[in-house]
Length: 280
Image (cartoon, rainbow, N blue to C red):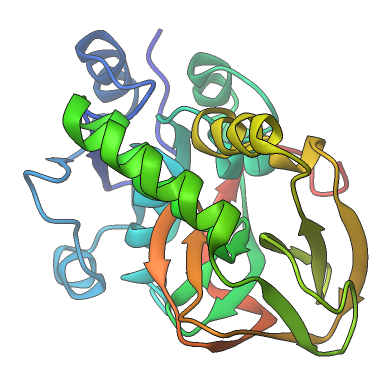
């Protein structure tokens, strides 16, 4: 079935290494959207705001995982076009937020009803998160995820060992402002946008088995919210501190912070196309 794109012309970004990408899916998507140009990231660089404006592009469709979508969006902040996020990764959390937990074909069929919307995210020193940030030693599991993605057995063993050791023994991260949660801090602190505030949850682990299980959940399922945690609260802004530079996982991708990091909830200056009803 062919679907007319909502706002042509369209450019398309794919990532062959992402979870849902395969030649058949990309071919079907290309037939549906009729993109004027297609970029296979990371072999092709992500298009910039200047690239899109120079070519008069109205819609950039991104069929990748959440990390690549974050990178694409970061390069487009302030652009007047719209970003169409499609479920091309493993978890597709941003796509689910914009379209519901639906297949690519169902989203494409509903594109004539799509509307432009803005999103709030978590502003960090290392860029904007559109979904969630994990701060603390537990964020080291993102390094393991990279080695799994590359199918590098030696790197997998090394990064798994490092992540397990750092999660168990690395300096905890505490909430410095507001002074909330456990005084001794946590192995990981989750920060996510909730309306115009920062939602904060704290994660710790009781034993070695729980460390490994929770680390695997962070790595593969990214469902650590389902594990035991402290619901610390929602705040206008949050500052966390540690005795060492704070490991960050921003929308599933690893970053390195300073010993003190501040997080705020802000509107991201970019329109997204959503097929999910605005009130759902």
